[in-house]
Length: 162
Image (tube, rainbow, N blue to C red; front, side, top):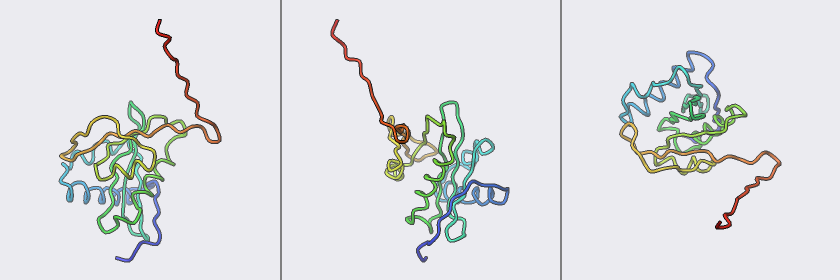
């Protein structure tokens, strides 16, 4: 396949696009990785969905949803023929840009081969490796960023030994 010249990511706006996103996720997670279909569709009704197109062709999908902990990024899937061209990177950037300005706790469960990609966006592994749907993952949390144009100040109180 020729190298993609145009990758676009946008929030899903109609049922047809949503079905395209679901189709990509089904292909990657259920068919390719063997995830149970019922886990793949869990929480779809409460999520904000995204579709990535490559030269106009649907090639990737993902979503985020508000949880009791914060904002969870989920279900990042890129079709095999579009992997290695930056589709995942574009999706992460678009999803992060779409989150509410007050989103403080942003997290995800990263498959092992995607950890480095998420680290480029400021995510850090927290806790031990774990298995989810038969696939090894790490929980990753996005490091808080200092205010734009501001300076991050950290104050430590030292014990005086008394």
